[in-house]
Length: 165
Image (cartoon, rainbow, N blue to C red; front, side, top):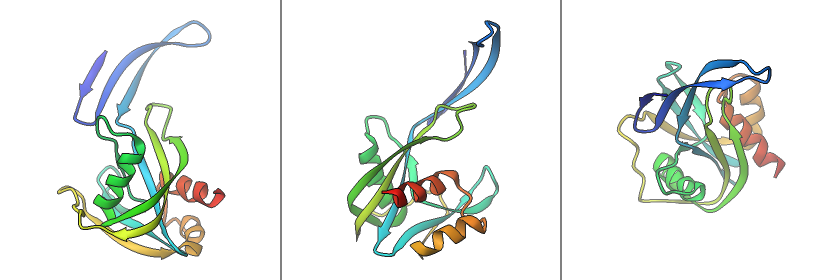
């Protein structure tokens, strides 16, 4: 049974069948799928400082965004990278996908490594976003994760996936 429908997600309550045959009521969140991009420029990358209302603080993360209806992940990655950073990438390398929190949501985030960056004149932040784009040396990323500067799970996964090549 659907209990909420919004612009980018629905929430449903459903009886699921457990392995022992009993039924249990679960709430499942169905957001739009998303992408995250690590834009690399030589030995540097572009990250964002962005205020996130759910945790009531600014966090450091990779550019990311939700897929619009009819878009494939590659199209979304191109669009979101420009919208959030003002840079495009001539090369976007797929680095797999992750399930964010499968205990209550089916959200999937497609991961991309962005190369051959170029400035774009299509830059336009959403009105509700407070984003600061900054460059960081890639050799600093492990320290930033270790020191708790980068705590965003998709960004941590993306950094490791890009490093694995």
